[in-house]
Length: 179
Image (spheres, rainbow, N blue to C red):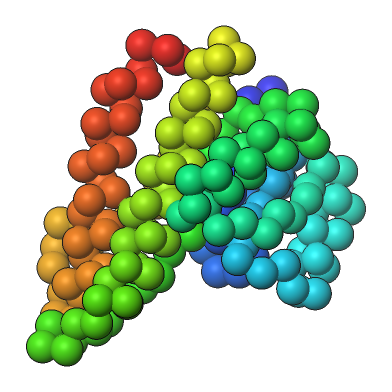
């Protein structure tokens, strides 16, 4: 028996790369898949059609989850379209390699917004949704080995992933009693 059959997974940054692979694997396991990306391209629409052809329900959403209201609206829209959300995978990210001597404040805000703020806001929205609905759920925040192993040129990336790693552990402590 497949434990994911009929479940719904919301996966951020799933228009390409690792997120796309995660979405495909969930669909192969029988889960319905809601994907978000900053832009829904023809390639993303073709991927959604491929997932739907596998016999699962799939839909793409444009989302800037670093915006508080957008994070909550995305969770609400997916729950309304799919009936429920069982799994959130925060995958969207920016792999930045800015030299430490020329760090740009705008780039810092962008990396932190996508790699740290977005998954925290979506985790908060999903956690609230799970609790209000009386559902157990799973939240997976994708970090990196660079959340604890620094790399040259990776100050912004390492800071954002390190912050997400420790924040994820704190949220796990808070959400665990609620399933």
